[in-house]
Length: 341
Image (tube, rainbow, N blue to C red):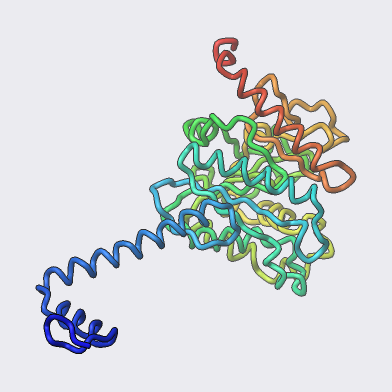
């Protein structure tokens, strides 16, 4: 059978004629069609990336888009790693904590790095199961090369006042909000002074102190050459292989040891009042119950609460739900709070 042009009609011949006609299209038109296809593919890739990148999937590759100099590092999946399985309440705590940090980061334009600690199983045979913060910080700094400050938050923390930015809470008055001397508050009785400390050195590490010493559940660290040296030494095998049996708090004890003996580390370290970024609930530091420097005060709208140690004899899920509801209630009433001060 032939068509009107005298060609034998068949699907193959028809396809061949269409290809011949396409080849005769102007080069510019073919380029336009190709560009449209490329654009469609790129839009599809961006759409898929935006869906998964904003879904809270830990360790999903994220590009450092935006100009924010702040990155929040949230450690998750801590109960699902080497030591034990997680139950429904543990998963609920994790979801609540992630949602809280994500909403805060989105609100202020910060980056959020959700780091899955259960992936760090390689540490178990090296006695590094509680030392992974240093490695995670280094990896996050590589992931966000333009960021300046990195705010580490443990899983059992909750940002109670999401309307307050880090700039307002800490950095706009950094010198007034931090202190370097241990004279007024020194729970571990560390050496108050050591030789060759430069108190005019730039602040690179901001750590709160609690009743047991340095607290690394909520702290800030700046990208700098000083920090590179600190992280290298902090991660040194000498500490985790030779002192893991003596140091109950692992990397925290290592930092306290370095601060006590190394002038250059003390020069770049500053302390911040605990309640500015790391308030405790009543169940923590029970031996100092009632200490106004330590415990969360909703009447003064403390910024962050850290349910430190809730997994040891307390109810992490109950505490997280309590502070979640309390924060929501405080935000509903917050419109009049500035005028009541």
